[in-house]
Image (cartoon, rainbow, N blue to C red; front, side, top):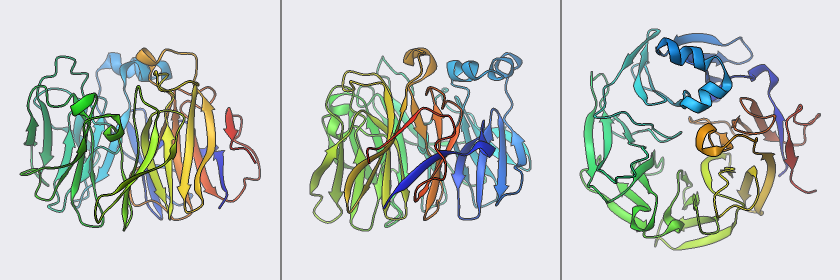
Length: 357
């Protein structure tokens, strides 16, 4: 099946944070919106920020330098939105943002917050943590005024949490950690982190940021800094793991669209990556195929972020999805639509290289 990639000009400057069949949640700077069909975006509220951050955030480079970006928007059963923005975590309800206090400021990577079968939101600390202090997994119970600590990794166990995801087939939660040696772990819990099962650990083949689930397998692409990056799948019954192919760099985020699975390689410019491109790969029964690639811009990764493709959370759609470009030449802060079939026009001015053929 052929997939096309084209810029969605009407969403330039917006990022799609949550995607459902008939609606989407969008972010633009500190503001969050809902869009129904083709109607104009409806403002839901904004995230408070100090004046100096608001001033810097008016410019794209300021947003990237300060990491002043929305990372997660998760609708809850009571109508509120669980939101992470930069190092802030809070709830948006009735147009008002209420911050939730953490033990210490941290980020939560995109797609890294999950609602468990108990209705609680689970998320973990993502900090630089060079000192290898302890690392916390938090739980936010519905309607509560504060978060709880669900689990603590002791000092030296892991560097940080890459993400927590819910398996829609059995409602278990999966916790992904990094970064080196035994810190690379894939863990699973059935009881809200009272107990944890180690699925795999010990090297960069278990270092990943996101998982995709099917009825028979779990899929992931590695976020390896030093080893060649690969796409893996593991059988649910028996846990047999196999390599499906090699990728051209580390993968942060992934997205399912129908039965096709997509993986976004980041332009991190690390030792495992020889080029300067962020690329979109698709896996289906026909094999692994590169759909498109974008050039990293000239700005340094350490200050202005790697070149990445940001996918939305949510139930998604069967024949299309969106991604938002960050740190990419002529594609930064632009949103792209991926759909079945060939586009009528190109990628609307972005430096995107389609797959051969």
